[in-house]
Image 1 (cartoon, rainbow, N blue to C red):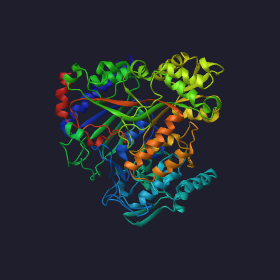
Image 2: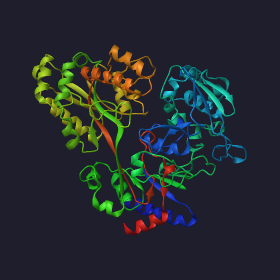
Image 3: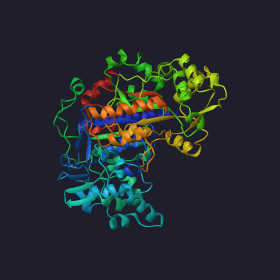
Image 4: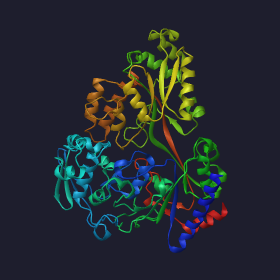
Length: 593
C-alpha cells in the first residue's frame, strides 16, 4: 500500500513538473538508491553524494565532457597552469568575475567573487578537518601531510578549527595576488591536475563554513551551476539554477563517438540547460523500473532482475523499448574486480604455484556469462579501458580455465589433490552476486581437491579492516577498485608497497624491481617508454600471481528520448549541467508511453 501511495504522489509530481514548462522551466528527475544527509565536500563518502555535490561545487579543473581519452581542462582556473622546468612548481590563475551563489552567509545575502585565497583556504580546510578524508593532492602538495598531523593534534586538545586555519599556513600553498596562487610539490606528478579534479578539492566559501558550522552539510555554498533548494529529509532533494553561474559553456569539440551520438548540437551555448533537478530516494529497483517506464524519472540503470528485459542479448536494447524512444548508453567502466591473495598468510603467501592452481581452476568465463550475467567483461590485468596503458589484446596466462594445468601446479606446490592444505578462507562483500560467485569459486576449486570457506563483510572498507586484524587467517579477499585518474598509477599501486602514508596494497605483495619501476613511471609523461616499463611491471606481477583478475564492469544506462546531450563521464560521474530536457517533447513522449 505504501509503495502505491508513493508512486501516486510521484506521478502527480511528474505531471506537475511537465506543466512547469509553461513558466519556461525545465526539470530533470533522477532516482538515488541510498538515503544520506549532507553533500559538503568534507562528508562525501558515496557515489550518490558525489553526483549531487558536483552540481553545486567546482574545483580548479575538470575533465573534458566529450573527449575520450579523457583530458583535463580548466574549470575555475583561468587556463592551464605555468609549470616550472623541474615540474615541482605550479602557478595557477583563477578566472575573474566568478561568484559564489547568493546565500545569507554573505553581507546582504549576495555571493562574492571567488579569489585565489579561496583555493588555498579550501585545500587547507579539507586537509585539516576530521575525519581527515583522503584526497591524493594531500600527498603531493608540500607541507600538507604535516599540516594534517598538526591539525589533528591541535583539535585533539579541543582547539578551534577556524582558529587553526587562520593561524597556520602551508609551505606549498602561496598567495601571489588576488587571482594567482603558487603550488609547490614534494615530487613530480604528471597527473597532479587530476588530483585537483576530485570532490575534495572543491572550492568552498569561508563565510559559509564559519556561518553554518556543523550544519554546513545542509547549506552548501559553491560556484557550481546549481544550489540546494530543498533537502526533503533525504527523501527528495531539489537543486535549482544558480543565478550567479555565468562561466559555463557547452564544449565545441568531442571524440568521434560524441559526433556519432550527435552530442555537439549545443556547442558553445551557455550552461546549464535544465532549471531544476530533483533526486528521489527510491530503494527498490522494481519501483525505479516502474518510474522510468512511466517517465517519472528520466535516467535509469537496470539491475539484475530486469537487465535482460531491456538487454535480451546483453548488449542491444530491446526493440519494444527502442521503438518507444528509450535510448541506451553502454560502455566499459573503469572499475576492476578481482580475487586478491593475502600474501601475509604463510600458506598462500609463500606458494605461487598454489595461487596459480587456484586461478587456473576457476572458470571465470562461466562466472561472468552465467553466474554474474553479462554486465562485466573479463579482466586480465588491473588497468581498465579509458586509462592509459590499457591493452585489450593482453591475455593473462593464468586466467585461462584449465583443470589439468591447475592440478599440475597444485602437485608442483606439494599439495597434490589438496593434500595437507587447510580450509582456505575467501572474504567477500555480502551481496547476492558475490555470494553466487563465491559459491561457484568454491565448487570450482573443489574439483582439484581444495576446500574453501566463504566469509562475508558489509563493504570493501570492512574487508580491509578485517584483513588488518586477521592477516594470518584470511587467504583470499574480493577487491573492487575504481580508477580515480586517467593515468594508471592508482591501479598500479595495488601492488606497490612504497613509503606513502596511505595504504593501497592489501595483498602484501612486494617485488623490489616492481617498486623501482613504479618510482620511475610515476614521474614519466605518458608515452611509449612508459608503456614499456608498465608492461614489464605487469608481466612480473602476473608471474608472481598475487591475484585472480575477474572483470571490468560495464556501465548500462537508459534514458528517454527527450533527454539530450547525455553522456556519463566515468571519472566524474554524471554532470547534469550539460543535459537539456525538451519539455514539449517530454509531454508528447509521456502521452505515448
